[in-house]
Image: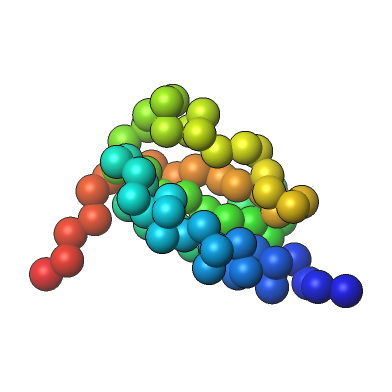
Length: 75
């Protein structure tokens, strides 16, 4: 049986680059959701409902959660 963290990592690897190509998405990671489950964390530069609507609430039983982090800058 595949552990949920492994499934989340696989899904991130499959979809991460595609999701990062979306305008408001600044990062894609795995981690704990607010309710303590393992999930995929999508960081957004601003709270944008149109971007949120692109994503289902979960993929293959792995929840997706959004965090508003602002724009990411690399120095």
